[in-house]
Image (cartoon, rainbow, N blue to C red; front, side, top):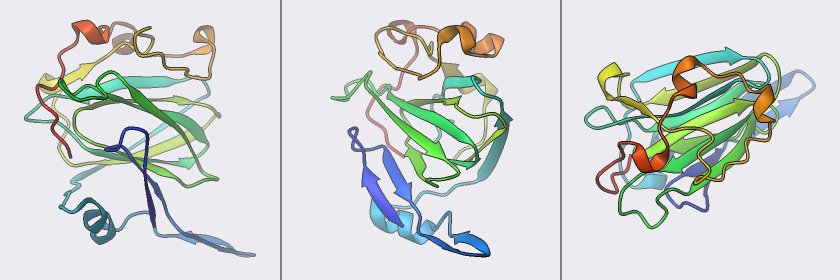
Length: 188
């Protein structure tokens, strides 16, 4: 596995090695020991989630506040998304900045999104299957979000706004300057 730090040092791209031949391919998608060795500490993922979506579905920007904050390890099994992580750690030098990366069944890349980041993705191909691990259980009372179209964030979602499909919840999220954010630069 290859670990790549992004423009926001704490958000990490993981590129697994793919072994392919005329039968298909084999890929090791997760190795706890290698991830922990790269990070220098342990993350204990406790839940796996999966969604299937059509082109233009946008999910996010979501996060959970402490004590239910989550680190996510996200990937695409089928199709393609633009995945986005926004730093919402008060006092962070990259507060309000984001990383966006294409994740697809072809590139097999994954993104490690630490605690203190809002996360979202937009689907770029029909019938996309998105999967992710989290290190804390879902907690409705700690669930929060930020408006995907907050002009202060400057995110190019690569899909015209008129072509997006959002949940009612995601159409009513607060702008970053009105949202509850993390009080310190917590990680993982």
